[in-house]
Length: 289
Image (spheres, rainbow, N blue to C red):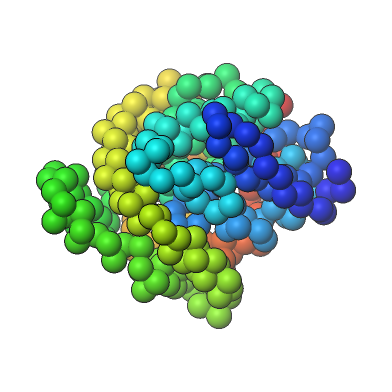
């Protein structure tokens, strides 16, 4: 495989077709990139060429996102446990024995479930605005937390704007250091997927289930304390959803975690991919094989 070429592949996992991007030397350490909401592995399009010079990079689309299968919510249980089960099947199918994992947004609770289930496989964790502490939840979560407390149809319906074009645009632009660096195909592609028939119910199921991630935070912290994984935190400090306090909180349980803030928003790779890519390369050099 040419290191500079990105291959676009699909693989069957638990009856689902999972799309993924793959690049870099097959005999080099693996770095698994897990995207968040409302995007897909497309968010890594500029990062993969930086990392694949030295590492074997794999970036799947989660079920319900991007080019992976998105069965109707009546036919697939859209929970974070089930997303993690799918990614577990994905790494098992590809025969990945050891890997570092990059976690972002929804990819954080998925990746941290994987880490707890496979501590022997994890060489390191890179969290880019991937929250694992209640201190990191901003006021933008208030309406969602109301739905967790009372999952009524009225509260569910009140969140339908969560998947609107305006909300997607906001996620990319709010707090960004230079909005001129945000490629319009990012939020346009995300919105095209969000607007597919039935997708709003898929996303509202996941919004509802996100409460299970918060409930698991103490277990994540226990994992950090017990295993002390090598950890790099690269955080847009103007993220409207996940506050800098959420990044700083990691160091309570993993004091050796490396923390780097960037003057930007949620999608930090849109504005700071070169800087973040360099930090990841420096970090990866220090990881065990």
